[in-house]
Length: 218
Image (cartoon, rainbow, N blue to C red; front, side, top):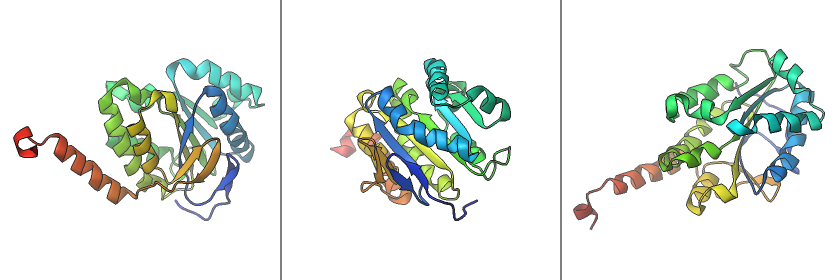
């Protein structure tokens, strides 16, 4: 449930009421340098931490948390830290189902999650989407739709994208589906954000053109 929540420090600025963020990085080192203070602050505040990482990243992620002074083992045992791989989170049964993921995130929101944590701080590594072009198309649509979930909650959701792995057109679309953005290590309001109703209209138009018979398109 949406409340009047205190601002949260992130990447040299503060998050207010709008907390769906896309974060673009050039390396793991840059990503952790920017996000670890935010993650550590969340543990100190007693917030729930949901970290969705690449399958081969789990050990390194836990080591980086430990280096930042976070007792990840204790946090996992208490339920404060939930560590998932992005393939098991997003690609259950080997496919990406937008409607299922909307339900998953609704349940991860602090108003619905177990444990009574004041907020959820969710960080998701999005590399899984580069495995299949169809995932990218669905992901872009999903990133717009999920804004309707997060506008009802105070939780912070950071979707991290490494620029070398995604094409320019995809990066632009991802930017347009997030109201807040981290680029160059700095958080700012995203001037390129397109509200979901308008963006979804564009998506439907693209799909209709894509499946239009070539004789009609000509």
